[in-house]
Length: 227
Image (cartoon, rainbow, N blue to C red; front, side, top):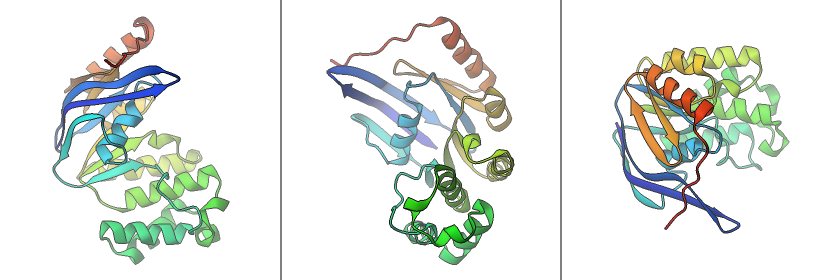
């Protein structure tokens, strides 16, 4: 379970204040996959990063029971001068898993080939994404945070990634950000909509999709100014 209590997050750019979380109170239940929906710029990825601990809220608390992944596919914490293999082994040590087992999984799943031993700065964006996704899914978490998992790699890799994710969801929870309604219907039980800093949770993902589609068609974008 993950609980958010009165969570606030505001960004300031050129003197303009945009609040993406305005006193959000939410509970993500155990063993439930939740789709997080919202228009571009609504703060979905920011919310995932706050839940993972990569980013801190301005105010409020976020607590979790069980292990929580970083946003799946997020490679922002990798070291560019280390090889893919070295990054993989380092993350294995941080999370207390067998480095040889994780290395074998990533090597087979990400299919990077000899480049796995080259510095990360030499990787294409696609290779970085495949490596990040492979490492993320190679560690078994109680809750996975997923940001556009189907955007990783080519069509064949996307199918392989989706299959593996579905297998992981048999025993884990997830918070999934995706612009594909079909994907969230396939992968998620519940849903939530983030719009203008307001968070609305639905036990049935279909109700969340209906709300989100209405927002996209009817509701004007409104930015919240901080006090």
